[in-house]
Length: 618
Image 1 (cartoon, helix red, strand yellow):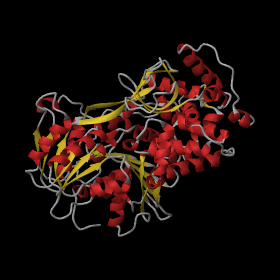
Image 2: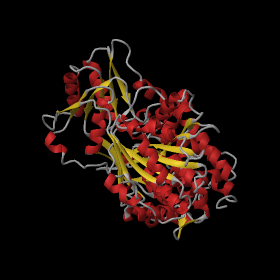
Image 3: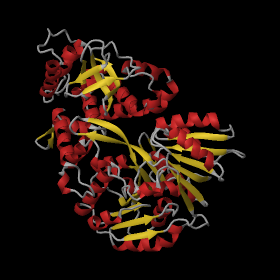
Image 4: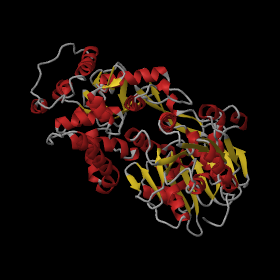
């Protein structure tokens, strides 16, 4: 352990004492207290741990890597020895690993594979205030594991802005509090003069004022587009000696590391970040924070089945976290871009993701776990309407029947991905399109949105494959992982030419869309809703589309799609297990009827279906 002390050090004896006597504990520790890296190391040799592991959950991959690296350095070891990490597509652990830093979804998979969490003595939920869907689910499952199977298992929930009143009673846990570093942060409020001032222009003006202060600058913006526009504007106004560095989740590991590295001698940094930098990170040299007070979050509509990316004010707790970035190492200053009179009217805490998310993945996890939502501990119970819609989706895909997983559903649940994509993988494997389906899913999940230079999915696939370096870094690892999981669970038919539109329609049959009128960019979806192409679309000449990505709004916007041929359209209902086929017929009938095509045309030959008819539904 290093010689210098941190505020959390004074509380470590109390943490040890409480966890030696009772299973659950809440820890509220201000930014800079050192809770993330000091606490796991301090508990490693406790008698009640008896050689078992500590699992430390972090909400983001960047924070997980950094926490593991820092703790390993304190032990004088490399990552992967006593301290390791497991995140999506990457892990560094060994037989000697006693502290595993995980992202939240990884813990859910561990629990489903081993509900007793064999060999684990303590689960730490860090930065729990962020209230991600996976963290709420993981806490519910770990708590039930503790209650029914592992009374010796300890739970520690930590945050700098903990809603202790919501947690203490359900968990029957005492609360400890640690103050952070005593570096003062002076707060200034700089709202926009009028509604016509665009956010990048306003930030540029405040940056000019803030540059009178010493130190590097961290600017919180709601999304990647805002970061790009603000960076372009600042590049025109600032000298080259000032580095303008983006920091968000779509960047590669190398690009994120660049943003976190100290500035070269004689230069200053302005880091333009989303809320990825809100928690768990100490960025050396930052003394100034400019907080837009905004964030972007997905909001799912059970009525339309479409998610809308909404910009909304951050909570007071998030504003506190952001301001704290300026005072981690020395006194700092924070500029808030909203009126001081508005601040106290903001929500006290972050709105839980479970209240606004598509709950089909959650419902699949609950069915696999074998518990109804009402049997689990929730700080915010899943909304009934969203759970009902999720069950309808799983039923339509043949995954759920009478509140139980079907055989098809059990197979989907083993693949470790969301239900629509798992259903697509199973169907594609039986059609001889497994590798293509894995690549398509990996592209949708890992290819940066800023590099989507077309909304035509086949064209985007071609463009992405030509960028071999990025393809190998971002897409190929996930595609290979999915393919390995798939081939471990079922036999895969010999690979044949794949139709991207058919694959997309298998996952989202209710998003099969037909142009409303010739020459227009408006489409009607099988679920009865409408959507429009963007003005720069490459799909204007298509009549039928399978929509891979749609953004909610007024109107809904088609972000990525593939042209659906008549042959693929008419063969679609035969490309899924028999239990699913009635749902596909229903969706196809809906789009044909509403679009004015009330009778089916003569069915063209379908080589794919004929070639695989013997394997479908097995």
